[in-house]
Length: 119
Image 1 (cartoon, rainbow, N blue to C red):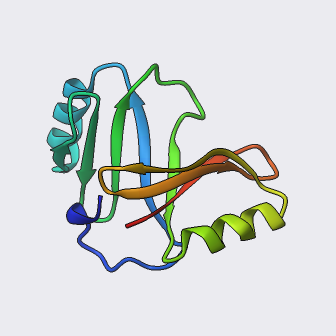
Image 2 (cartoon, rainbow, N blue to C red):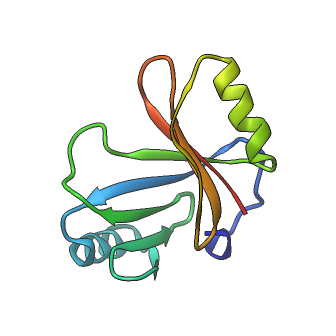
């Protein structure tokens, strides 16, 4: 993920948004035409995008309301995870590795699911 970023990474900022798409090629074409987003494919099931003020990705799935995933960056993923647990959040996917680093996913007190990543 880090190679597509044009901005400085800031600890615990909202940094990345993931969408579900039933047709990633169609999504890429639409957002390229509308907003000029640039895409980087990671295999056939995931593509990352970067625009002037937004970065994120598309993964295969059936889009429904509430399926956008907000991703925060952390300089210290273990400490951020501990803070979330201490505040009453629930870890729904523990720390795992992916081609850009490591991440985990959690729900807040309202049930919203977010993710935290690190390089």
